[in-house]
Amino acid sequence: EVDYRMASQTRLLIYDDRVEVANPGDLLNRLTLESLRFGISQRRNPRVAALLARAHSTRREHMGVGIPEMFRLMTDRGLPEPSFRIEAGHFRLVLMTR
Image (cartoon, rainbow, N blue to C red; front, side, top):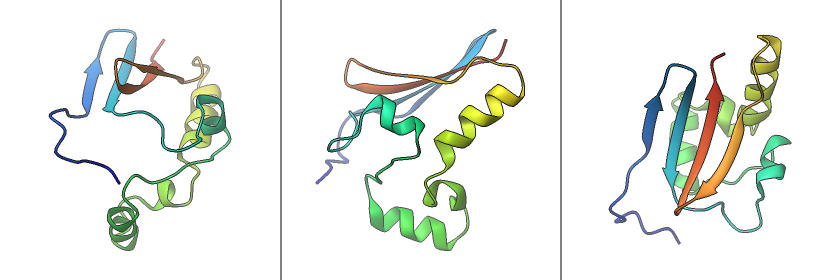
């Protein structure tokens, strides 16, 4: 079970050459950084995900294709592949813009 009372928040950092998204927490269960690339995912809160999917606001993520699609779109635009890190209790996504 996830403790949502954690005193942390998702951060969106925008720089001249990249965008970074930092989410509190580690990967769930046995997920690895490499497995994300292949669309293997788990929802932290399946009830919230199901509600959002019904509202069509997260349709793509609900299907488990969000991260592979990120790789495809970045490559199609000639940009470096997204990178992921886990550091200081946060999962970090980096999208280079150049």
